[in-house]
Image 1 (cartoon, one colour):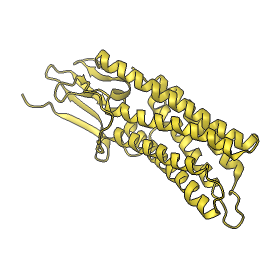
Image 2 (cartoon, one colour; image 1 turned 45 degrees about the horizontal axis):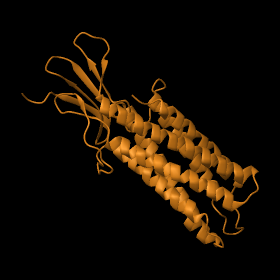
Image 3 (cartoon, helix red, strand yellow; image 1 turned 180 degrees about the vertical axis):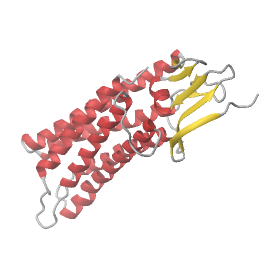
Image 4 (cartoon, helix red, strand yellow; image 1 turned 120 degrees about the horizontal axis):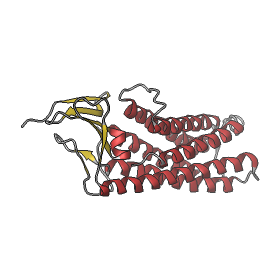
Length: 280
């Protein structure tokens, strides 16, 4: 028997939703984010107006819940520490070493959240060609799948957290010239912000099944992406304001830099809380 005809949707070359019919007439819908976050397919019997969920096996669901809890907790904690670091800079003693230490601790949690997000993609259940069931492969710590939009989005996010790590490490350096500060601290900050924004755009494309963002106010996954993307935008505003003027040696706007980081970090913490509920 040949493979069932499939209808693919997505953004550009990426497939984020597949619809096909089983031999018995049931219509099966696989959506990338729902499958990897909640471990479900939608199955609609002939004549039914709505589909019923078809879940992955217990082993796979336990894996999804565990990974989701770790990623969610990491982003909540990392966001809280970033917000605390910005508050120390804005309202505290002004000790740059203290704020840099708090930022660095938050960055480690962001690194963890970014890597575990990638693990969620690599170890999520996948649909079996032709059958439609979700199956779980052996555990993987790494994989290269650039033609999967979810992999690309989480990989870019993870790389962004690593680039932020360079920025956070370099912020401990003292006695730098203005040019060195902008090259070693500000430039990695900007690159990290750009990568976060790209990752968020790709995540929107995965949910919307198209290149342009959409409004899906009833989708929890959409809210997770939207809140995090707003946080990334605030991080970008903060980074732009943190450029050091060569003529004066001062930041363009210290207040905007601190408040942008603080509010952006709160967004990531809120996104982490919302993500906690996006599970099987």
